[in-house]
Image (cartoon, rainbow, N blue to C red):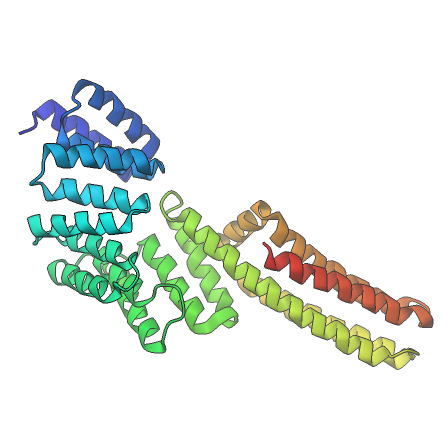
Length: 349
């Protein structure tokens, strides 16, 4: 049985982890392990801290030492399973997770972890579903168990409407239990994106942005990357729309532009700009959306460049209405090349 000073020190490390201060927790673990290298509880916490700072191989080492010192502790096998999974050893992680379930069958965390491990193994989705369902049975009031159901139902790839509906219901239950759960907000936005596509981008961006702001340490990076993916789809779709608009404008003016053709070109481009501005006003409607979208664009030069080229392409196309007759089609072709370059850049963002 661990003494009280050691127990207090471990609790302080756990507090640091809960506060998202993983680097400090890792340093504290190293200091404590130097004085007490054979404390299995401390090794378990050290394994968790190592994973949080992306030192997965080190986390596996701590996990194996904990299992060697406490072979009958389900928490030790669970920590090892999580570390192995993070380090890319899905089969070994699943084996350790099964051991944790066998040693602690009433601990919902063990079943949740088993579901995570099985979901990473090809062909084990049904087993992951059973493990996640058991976790819900044991802990129906824990949001994490419902989120695991959603993760099994909707893996992010091609899904049926029934799977998307099931995932959405599970996430909404998690949010009912914990309305501030940033992970649930992020997952709900993912499901909404799968259901509505780019047409529902405003609501989806609101969900991802809200999740990033609500928990920047744990969910921020994932949610911000999801915002990037949505913006990429939006700019790509708007690029094709602009490409079509410029092509239509080229048809209006023809080889010998008339005044009516020039006016038609300007009206068409004005309508296109109005539509795009209206869409972006919807995307930037909330404070959190504005902050996160600006942050994502600032850190992704290709996406910013694609948006800038799209604007330049529209300006060049509009300028075609004011050049001499022989140059109008040539300027519009330049606009098409610029918009096409925007599409290529956006695709690589």
